[in-house]
Length: 282
Image: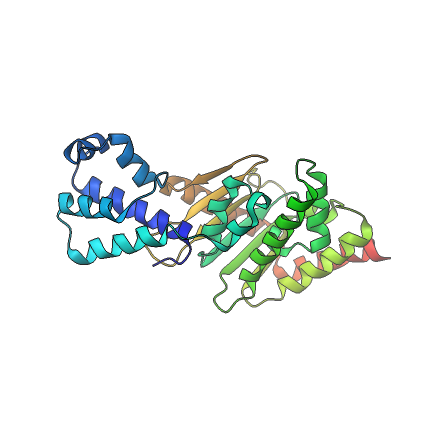
């Protein structure tokens, strides 16, 4: 069973929807049978409503599930109510980003393409502060909270059960000066060190790589349980998009494979990063 409350809530939603679809019923039909609204059933299946253990009891009686499945679903519902570590940082973490952090913590495979910035899991504190400073909507206190959250997230790359992480970043991310040249020099040194981690693969897509999928930055997360399907994450300034359907995941996975094929090898990527680093430090 997935560990973070976000992942458990997602798994519960998947299981409840599966039960209804197996019974070939609509949300409205289930709601009518239980004297609920169809929208309540829909909220349970999309993770947008709190599911009480009593709700699980009612649904499992209606669907005639086994006691084992009922107990499993109730344990998911209880676990989904717990708070993730990131929630203690309050307004330092946008509400729309809470879901992503919870899912990121559970991923066993991590595939990310960045076209403008160094990947967040590889950024130095100074680089992070400069990005947050440019985001004038954040107060000084929230910038520091956001910094602590990102540093905490970075621990996933070095923990004992770290995910298999593969990053492809555009050469532009290396040459886009955030702060000043000294800051970028420190950042690229940190990037090279992160690339040495045994679970990390880092490739650079050079300017002269030719035509490749014009996708914008995205992340594909994979999970340990087959019942938890992979998903694609894309974010913006004020919101995020989660794509879970198999066609979406398939196309983004294909796009990542094409980007990976067009990028430099890990060795040549290291040489390019080192070359750019020398430009910043000379």
